[in-house]
Length: 557
Image 1 (cartoon, rainbow, N blue to C red):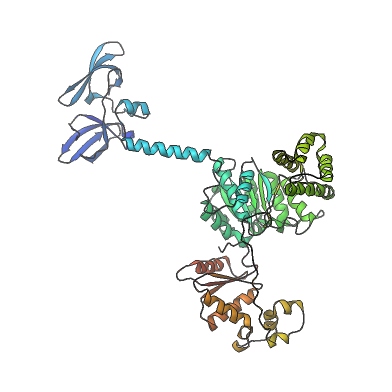
Image 2: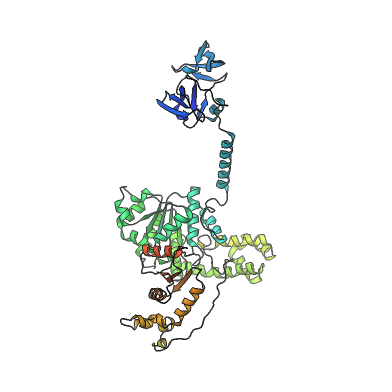
């Protein structure tokens, strides 16, 4: 039924309750004019859909006169569409208050006030809000909060590591998964969960300069994190006393920060909660000396509570290099290199015993003795149960050993051999005859492995007909293969950038197949353009030819 609007009636706006009590001025055809004396605002509404609720007080309510005195309503009278309130004032005297004289500053801020005044939304809006809050509560209490929102398909080992690390207060760990197992995804999940849980609010990400844009894109695209990329230009143009305080998430080139002392001072004073360092194996340390990059990270790690170091090669450069990164995480625990070496040697028999327990489900007498010597009398009960084949006891025993292992809670490393579910890589050899031009090259590892590079280096100014790709049968095989795969995107990886550039020329001249290159000699912008050209499904290149180093850190999938 349509509302009956009369001049002098008091109504309140559903959408702008802060305007106070409104008074109907006039109803002109289909337009309704309402004055809000408390703010001096006037609003016009369509009479059939005006977002207004009639203010109607009930017996027992306390109402206020525009002069400030209050009255408790005892009776409500409707006279020609206007309400007259009868009741008692503060002195318990009978009085009358027409609705036209109600205070203009009445607002319904409490749910109970809105309910008693009849200012009620339709049921479907309540249902929507209820289900929204219910779903939000489920998200906030979910064990995957901060882990399930990424635009990625995390593998089980990534979720396990991310949750284990992100649930710590000020985590200090080394993420050392093999290449291709998703350390960047793990770091992003940790950052995301730490931010959402409130364990961290400000994050500093240090990466090599050539990986800055890759990290920027990954954090924005996969985790919807607004990361600010800092360089010399942005730092100088900032109006803030400390440019790093303009953002909560800063992405910084380690090379630039090392060379700019002003930026270093600002970074130390910015007050970070979490430090993330990618390609940490490039931080060089020796007992007698350390690189400038290592010293900078060491100083930051002393003042920042949480530290995440990322590397795919934890011990590639030996125990000394591995020790260098561990001392960044816990300098008190890892303070002496020789003591670390001796301690690491003692863990080898224990690791072999644990592996035997995992493989066989039981412990041999020798393995039992090894673990007994390591745990002492405290673990005797668990050890006895695990020896008898108790699975739960075996799991608790392994956790106990992990806690006592030197790097058990600091180092996380997964390998392709240990992580299941990856498609098995298969070699499909295509033996081809060696051209006579290559047989004439001098013997040597370089000529045998990369004959095209050796051949081209002997040409002073090679003409088109003397280029290696004019006679190399591998090029012809590649062209035929690409024609068979014309509906698919193909990634070709070369050992050298020169080979990639030559192959692009060969495909363009000999076949017309659209191709682009990606190598270390290109700028970040040029690499992104090449990757975008390759990613375009309709008009993009069929083939992306990249060098081995040029593709480092990029996920072409």
